[in-house]
Length: 342
Image 1 (cartoon, rainbow, N blue to C red):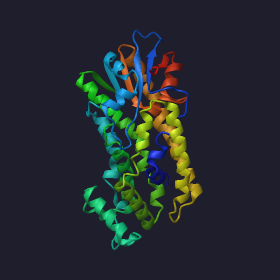
Image 2: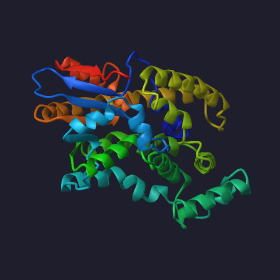
Image 3: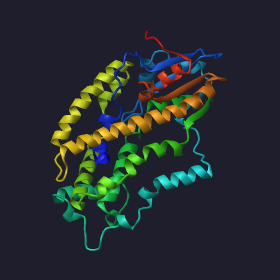
Image 4: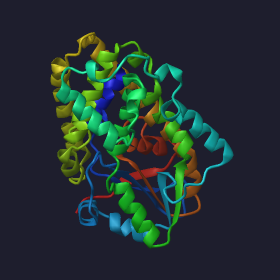
């Protein structure tokens, strides 16, 4: 169930909990024996919205200057290299296997067809068109709706980032300037934290095929209307370079989430169960997507900033909170100060 709610409200839970008295997204790292300053920068991964250079460098005070002073760019993963070791390839195959190499449990039973599973012919036609032309699988009907729920959850995650993100813009600039580019984690490590949110199928497998088909329709209908991964307001608020304002934005989004839960009316779902699933999704994000990754990244950051001037560009939520990179670096003895707005 938590996967269903996460997919439907993907944008609403992506960055909740940001309300703190921090002024902006660019921070200087100094002290603790460092010979030169480095920079910590909170990016926005996009959620379907593209960013221009004018927006980024015109909104984030000091960012252009930080780029001039930086000789090494560190992203969450190394955006400049797709090379993986044999061990990493094996781990990626394991993580993606359930999705791209489904077992017999995800094959449609003989004599069961898709069309009768939907509430109307129009709903079936919308799904049929999407699967055939967007997912590019003319034989999608050979796999169960439960299998396609999993695939569509991952599609939502990927589609939300198929735009010119702030991270992508910085990578373009680093490449143009011939800067050293590195990553804080391997692709396999990052996907190992993300994939359980999409490949844990227990709650989906307990639903009837008709209930699974309803989920597929809601997802596909959302994709067609860009409603599941496109938040123009997020684009605007991020560019105000004010963590407090972004925090208030997501507090309001959280309130709207409760309205969505009340309107969510699939047979077999209990609203208390939905709220519990949402809480589980948030807890998973906080523990595995944020805290565990931040602690692993800290080791890499300490090593890199000891010998060079770095710009460390990670999703803005990774900066904040008691388990955020700002707090972790300060606990290690570094001075971390926000670059003041003009």
